[in-house]
Length: 210
Image (cartoon, rainbow, N blue to C red; front, side, top):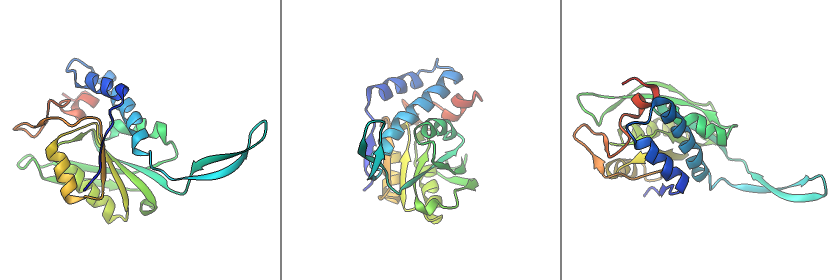
């Protein structure tokens, strides 16, 4: 089954609490999402392999370690995933970026449809980290993972800020090989399929559209 990693660093937990507050405005909300994504990306890249090289410091030769071989691609799920992208890139600026656009069927909240997809040409050779602030029903996450797997990616992680048991189960059942990095596991979903207590509609709060 998927390995679920909860990023319990005090700074992450503090910032998620501020994110939850309904009085947090769009500007601060965007900044918090970026900051949380940067901290969580530290956890998501913890297992990148290293190799030893020799470098010359101002004083002497030294054996040092650098990341070996494995390159990274970030793939935000539009539109809310875009809010996490800058934070992730701040930590791994050399990463390539793909985009997947999905929307939820209003007549069936768990069904998602693809409207856009543009991925790096060499995605099969990269560790892919899919970004979406919310893992609710799991429909969008499963669909996005299907898309990147079809493109050839084999090393995939899913990074979200808040999730719930239903979303975790959906991804674990469909893609047991995909690790999930999250900041919080909430109680569950309400009748409108929003995470409770959650953070509300993340896209609307990010971009001030409601």
